[in-house]
Amino acid sequence: MSGCTNCSTDTQGVGGCQNNGSCGTGDCNKMNTFDWLSHMGIPEVDTFDVVEIKFKGGRKDYFRNSQLLPLTTGDPVVVDVPNGHHIGYVSLQGELVRLQMQKRKVKNDDSLTSIYRIASQKDLEKWQDAKNRELPTLYRSKQIIDELKLGMKLSDVEFQADNSKATFYYSADDRVDFRELIKILASEFKIRVEMRQISLRQEAGRLGGIGVCGRELCCSTWIFDFKSVTTSAARYQNLSLNPSKLSGQCGRLKCCLNFELDSYLSALKDIPKIEKPLLTEAGPAKLQKTDIFRRLMWFSYNDDNNWHSIDCDRVQVILEQNEKGITPFNLKQDKAFEGEYDLNKTNEDLELLDKKFAQTKRKKKRKPKNRKPPAPETAASGDTPASKPRRPNRNPRRGNKNRNGQENNPQSSGKGPQGDARAAGNTSRNRKRKPNPNRNRGGQNKPNQGPSDGA
Image 1 (cartoon, one colour):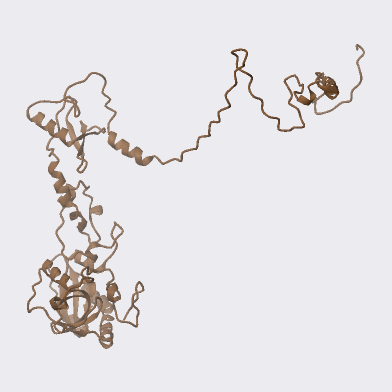
Image 2 (cartoon, helix red, strand yellow; image 1 turned 180 degrees about the vertical axis):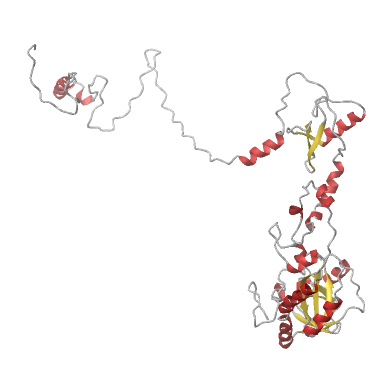
């Protein structure tokens, strides 16, 4: 028995996750169900005795629990099938089974077979031996089909648990005469052969896969009743009829095209039908695009590249005017107006959306704080403002010099003998020196040659 690495099931235990689901069966996430009534206290006397059993590929069938066996979701059970027995896993039980039978239109009568027992380890080992024959049988059967040149595609083989019967699932576009194929398969594999034709959607559901949306295929997880999908569903939703984008992995139109079709049909009731161009003085306006939920329609004059967006109410007004023989000035106004009309200013809604998503958010730079200087004090004697406050001297040893080179240090302001001596000594320093003509000439410093003769 193969185990599952995503849950508590191992190769030594019984298949299935008990209350966690039904993995360990080889069909993880295929047609899983959740019993949302399991935590509710329903009387055991009124418990529905029919159980839903899941087999390979997500196939489900209903069997009667006539012996009232204590079953749990994920338990392997031996069920009665025509000409033998088979093993499946319990997927759902209780009152939800009654609802599922009504949804799938399955009658609760004597045609339902019963459950024999819970599968033992010996039953599971025998079933595993039968499952090991499926892959070699599939390859050999494809070779035989190619030799007989039959127009069919074999997708899967399912052996019965008692190893007496095998079901071959195939898909074909036309009717296939496989009578000779059945004889060859029965004589070579020594089993009873059943050929079952399935559609391409059912084939994709049995194989499984990941869709373009990034999730598992709907046909392999929850869809069991396939409805026809037509191209009109894409037209109602204003989708481009591109087969590569509208087709799923099965090669048919995607089933999800039907999911939102009802919402689009209800919204299209308020959208006016445009069968011919709208007549205006600026020219005939042809419909280019319709936003169904925003109720906006884009038109262009004479197949111009500039599109003009108007709401559906305005379109309805123009249609009524054209039926009466009235031609409005343009799409947005009935009469001419004074001033210039900028025809290039179109596609405003589309341009705003482009700018919204094209511009990257830039971090706002912090503005430096404006430090205001202290308010100047007005002079007491006159109206002229007082002088600006001086910056404090950072070096207390050096005095503040004025523009003439004299220090404004209060210690050297001339008060006292020391102040007079310092002031007298600074006068010689503040005299202008004569420039040296030999300085910075060719990078050479020549010695002084003394005073000239003229001096």
